[in-house]
Length: 392
Picture: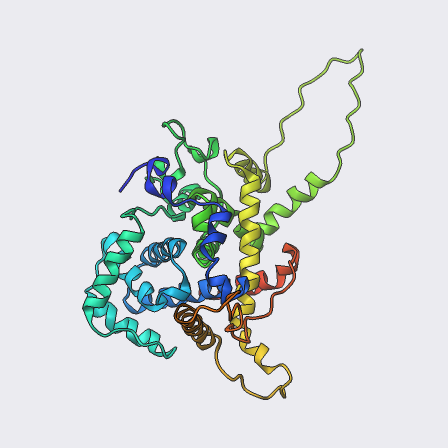
């Protein structure tokens, strides 16, 4: 594995801009809305994680497989591929890369059991999955090194004292750690529950395109920032310092000329001051960190609506009426309809405009809400934090 992130294929080939992401979904956008495509990404990551759990694989395998999945769909479309087979192939390949390989028969058996819940049939022969592995390798350009934010997170918190310096991000051409003075011998004072919350936030980033947009050390800092803001004990520590920072300090009167000036004692820094000082010393672009945090809040809002989508089916029905179908089944059917529409358009290209642009979308996820400010996602974030706390 490459020891320097800046010299790795991850940095030089697989960090893209937003225009590239949008162009990658141009064809899918003819059959689904942007919100539906975001929900498809969440669904694929959830199903992939469920498959890795059934195979008893580590979290890093799930994260690597999800990254492979995102990279694959930078060059391919949902409507022209079988996401179920791609997900199984990504898990099979990631298990090898992370040095915990699983037999192809076991992956096929567990994948068939997972996708059977959504009425998706996966080929039962092992050769199909083995062939999918070669397609994945080709589309990934054989770039299989993936850096994750986890080690940067535990290194910043002093939980892994023997972490190699490159995990903190080294400057191009070598030199000191990019995170700056705070990354060298100084650690953030946060308890295990706060660290666990930041860890879960990093897990959640793989439901979005953030791993394709930003280096892992920036994602780790953003996750740590969200944990400090959302974790009640850490937020209570920061509150006094933040309120003092927002209160204007009156100018001190100059000392009298006939009195000898005495040195003013240096106040002892409080835990809140130490936390803010640690974050301030990180040699990162805080504007980008704030952007990542805002995208995470927006993701939680979409994710919350995605998980509560069955409630939308009750519109115009008695409150006691059960939902017609689960949201997972609805997304699976949406993927099938997208492929069917695409095959129909390829077989019978319409004269003029492409037919079925967005018409095959499911009723649950079809509504496109207006742009929502970050502060309106507070309820979704609070619900996500409570669910994360429940995991601990």
